[in-house]
Amino acid sequence: MKKYSFHIVIVLILLIAACSHKEEKFELFSPEAFAYSMDSGWELNASCRVKGFKQNEEENNFKAKLSFSIDLLTPDGKILPGIGEGLIDQSAKERIIDLPVETQIQLDSTYKAGKYTLTFNVTDDFSGKNISIKKEFDLTN
Image (tube, rainbow, N blue to C red; front, side, top):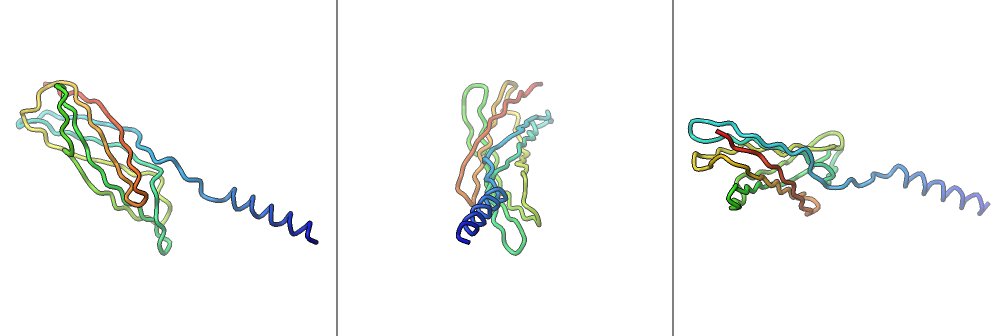
């Protein structure tokens, strides 16, 4: 009888391990950035997607909370930290696969044509993990 109990326990452990939720890597992907020329300067639209963040489950509702900031590197090497920032506070009935990180920033006429680099900095507020991704774009007249 003990032999069968041992086998049942082993099978149950393997079943639970196979069905358990594997933690996905916290990462940013698919960065995009483009700017439209306007009379008073530029309108910059930028986005990326984030996955692998921690989700809290309460009463059959999944909740994710992410903070982000965006830094800009100018063509002359100057870093402008925090030109954009925001909070993503999302709830859903099912586990959330990924979320968009989006911003729209007005750049005045002091920003000259050239190659710029955006850095998306995202913090998972539930786990405390931080991650960044860069995206180059051009301002052209």
